[in-house]
Length: 133
Image (cartoon, rainbow, N blue to C red; front, side):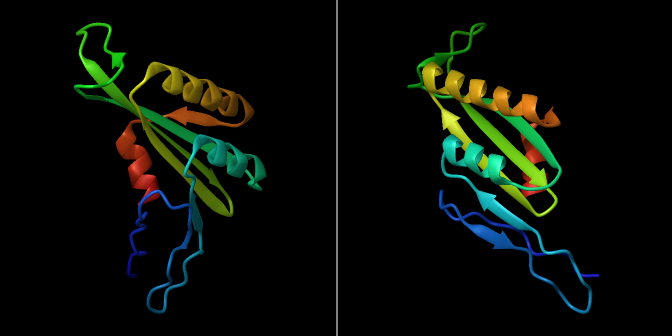
């Protein structure tokens, strides 16, 4: 059995990707959508059909000019938030990096609302990347 091709996103374009069948093996075709904004992600999640599972992650990284600061070290940081919805017919992926606390806190608030509506799991960033690629 040959593996499915790796899924690659180009820029921040919102696109649908189909996994390609290889050889004589038959694979289920799954569509992956990338949302440009959190609002797009929420809209796609709400319109997705079937059983849904939501995966979210956050990762801090140092950034000299960030407005968000680490409480312990005082170091300026940026926070990357990722969210992945998996359902029977498609997956929807969102990722954004926030360097100011107002936008970051609003994004977290909106994702928490989604988490209440369906089964959800907080995972490490590499787990989302494994599921996306």
